[in-house]
Image 1 (cartoon, helix red, strand yellow):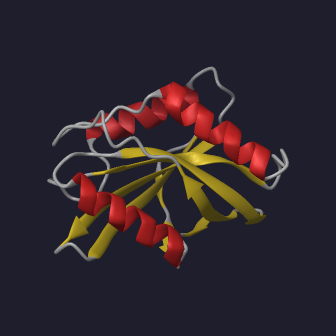
Image 2: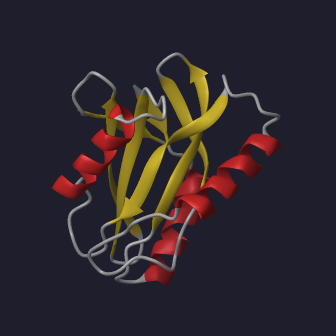
Length: 151
């Protein structure tokens, strides 16, 4: 799997991280499939309220509304534009999935929602300008795999 994180999306994430400070924030990732196995993150939702310095749990209602609006904007072209995964920040910890993050994502793809794979993007802002991140894909009937992210 290959994922592109465009400059505009990176800048929006960085601005939100600056505002959030030491609180974890996050939401869902919405993407465009460019070709099989190749995706571009085109939008994301964000919850800037419910996180703490060490924990983030997203509100399904808020992010569901963002996803519905995304589907409307993209003409319900689910084969091309769809839910890509989850993202959140680790302002006080390394930009890699915690054990709790891994468990949550495995429950998501092995659950009842018919999600075959989901990307987890963990982000951290260093020195207020540098965006550190890691991306991991969680696959139904498979093991989590690191994903290279390009601009």
